[in-house]
Length: 231
Image 1: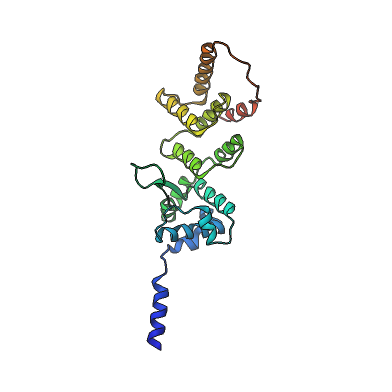
Image 2: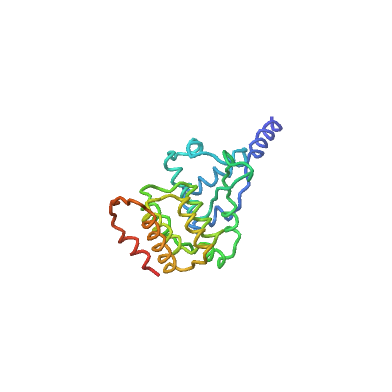
């Protein structure tokens, strides 16, 4: 009977997962809320189960959160740069995404000084985009902004300026904003003033090339000039 009990308990122990102790003891210092911590644990377990990109619905089934709450938590983790969406195989584009907790593990083992440097992000970018798009950003869109900031090293002020240009041109989408940023980088534009002048010339050129321009509906753009004057 004792041997049977031993094997039963051993089966339980064999199903355990390993986690850094610092995740449990220091998650608050990284600004992680309890719901975010539970979501991180579930994503880690999904990885162990062979599912590297669980849906909010699948995570919701394992927690007491609604699917909508799970979506908000995932967006928050990506905004805090604790979770990223990556491509498993660059040759494929559809159904090839996976969640990576590598940014979280890196922060857990960094020195305090390094942590402060890595978390010094312009937090006003995300709500600004959500305000202009009139909806919460998707995880992919949040990751796109993080790529502009980290991998492409775009200045936050220039990202704001590119958003403004997209609004003024009536082309409010991430692909257009990305094209603007790449064009500015190619032409060596590094300041908001240079970007503003370039955008002004571009719009004037567009107006000249239009044979019969129709009067467009006016929109109050004072907001954009306000936040561009922050420099």
